[in-house]
Structure formats: structure tokens, C-alpha cells
Image (cartoon, rainbow, N blue to C red; front, side):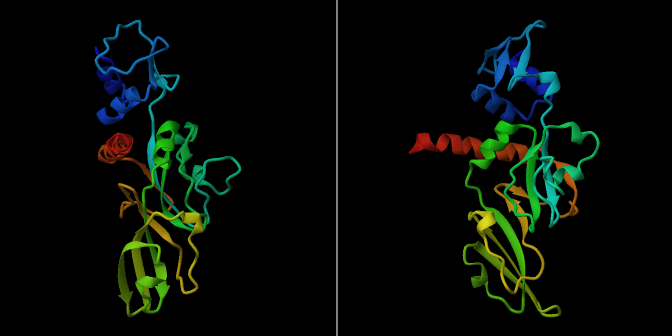
Length: 227
């Protein structure tokens, strides 16, 4: 059996993720780094990822719909934090989040127990898709740092909903005097917040979502060589 098939059968990620793990030198066989997916294994071989036996890794990739007033952290001193939303099984995981969403904002937060993966994602200059509601017939100029802004005016409530993309540091974006309710992150890079994911809940990423994340990370890895 090849190392690629072994890792696939042991649910260590999608094929694209497994190839990237090998390329990054994170897979070892008998404590020696391997990078070829065609390496043949024997029953006596000890396979590990990031120094942890494959049987104990089982990486998790989670998408949270964070409510306002909650910190986007799993640290014990983050109260209330995302850890309070976890079910019993997931509480045993050494989860971390991107931790870039202000406490008074709501919406999409990515979390995982695969710290190198999170570090790779955090290093990307991916845009966030944000939504804000403003009192009255607000113009898109109210969010000057946003791109591809759409404007939807609700005459009955006299509220304008603005949705757009920004690569600006989220913590540095000011609140608007005419703002009604929190700023909500609906998307981040290739990820989108599911309509059916209620506020204060989470789910695992779909295979298509992890594949797209890995694809975008691969493109970023290749971009320097193209310059």
C-alpha cells in the first residue's frame, strides 16, 4: 500500500490535502520525512503527521456562525468563547480559530485542530464578505473600503442593507453612527456562511470546501515561482 492510499483510508484529509501534507514535509514514516505519495508501506511502519500518530490525528475543520458578544477563541480565559458552543466530543480537541473577528461582530469563523493549516490560511490576504444595516436610505459610500457593494433598501423598516468585500483589517473597521445591529461576516476567501447554519452553531467543512481551500493555498504557494 502506498503512503497516499494509507493516509486516505485513515481519513487524513482529501487527496489534495494529503499531497500538500507530503509536500510540506509534515508526514514521517519511522520518524523520517517522506514527500512521495508513491512510497510503499509495510505493516511495521509507523506513520505520523506533525509528530502525531495517524490513528490519533483525525483533523477537524469547522465553520462557526459566531454570535455577537462572543470571543472567537477557544482559550480558557476567553469567556464567553467558541469553546462554549462545542459538543462533548469536540471539546477534547485542541482547536484554534483564525481569531480575527471582533467581539461585537457576528458571522463566519474558521477553526481547526490542524494548526499549520490555520497558519497557512491566516497568512493569505483573503477578503471578507461583510454585511451591515444602516438607518435610512444609506449610500454605498458609507463603506468606502468595501468592494463589489450591493445596496438593498427596506422602505417599510427604513433600513438599508449593504453587502460587500474588504481586505482591510477587520478590527480596524469603524462602526457607523447610523448602523442598526452588528456587522456580519458572510464569507471569507472561498468560504461562505450557510443560510441554514443558525447563529451560535457550527458544522464541519464539506469536502468541496476543504478542497477549495487547499486549491487556493496551492495557488498561493505557486505564485512566487511565476513572478
